[in-house]
Length: 150
Image 1 (spheres, rainbow, N blue to C red):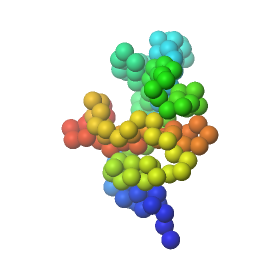
Image 2 (image 1 turned 180 degrees about the horizontal axis):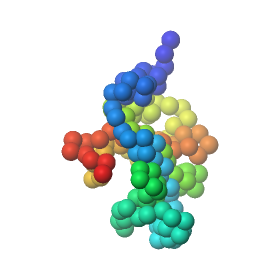
Image 3 (image 1 turned 120 degrees about the vertical axis):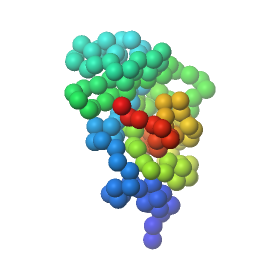
Image 4 (image 1 turned 90 degrees about the horizontal axis):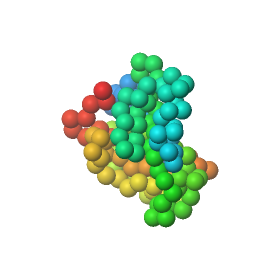
């Protein structure tokens, strides 16, 4: 017997079906939550990371030819779910062919908490962020038409 989560994972193509191709360095990208983007970017640059893109509250950092680290400034906000970002220090982006199927499974998980709702984003992805047990946060995403990872 399969759970709804297993069914959603099959529908999303997360089993090794080859339904969606994302370069290895762009799959499972970590996004670090920080109260100070400027300090965090400076810290990473001192270690050899390159700032590939920087906005007011977000930076895409590069390491080598393909590896990425996302940095998002997330101040304490009483409107966010309890413990965010205090319990959650970042998220791992997981690219899937059908983010809506994964979302349907996520909203019923007893240990899950939707941190950012499912939506089309200006950066070319349809995504949501799910907080799990013990500080794990996962951001599931599907490319919108016209999305380019370069």
